[in-house]
Length: 164
Image (cartoon, rainbow, N blue to C red):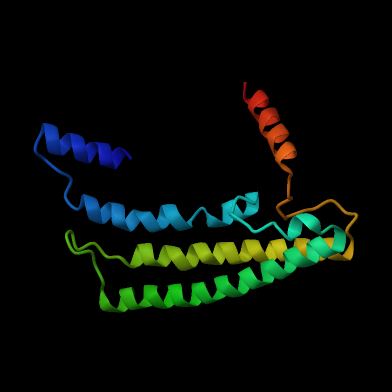
């Protein structure tokens, strides 16, 4: 954001744009898009299909969650492999941006690193679901907990009251 402001002000006021501004923005997008994925998964912030899960309770619910997590682990493992191959190709060929000729391999390396963090997070989550399948009476640990609309609203009200 600050770079964008500096670009606009420098170009309009001083006729001095930032060289390679578009390339810098292009390269930084991977960091902003991918590095927060594991944290979002930890918070349970991803969009999910809960039409079936909201009817399941106990072991059945945790088994469905574990199955979904296993599927996600497989998909993310494939994305890690292909993301790493994409990074290696950019590294070997010396791929660079068109305008400023900045190397693109660092931003392409962000993708498999971020997906690896997500894979580890999903593995931890799977362990939490297996634990809950074996002992459903225990408190959920390392898994996002489904909240109803009323519970979510009450939690947000409580958090906003604490900030004051």
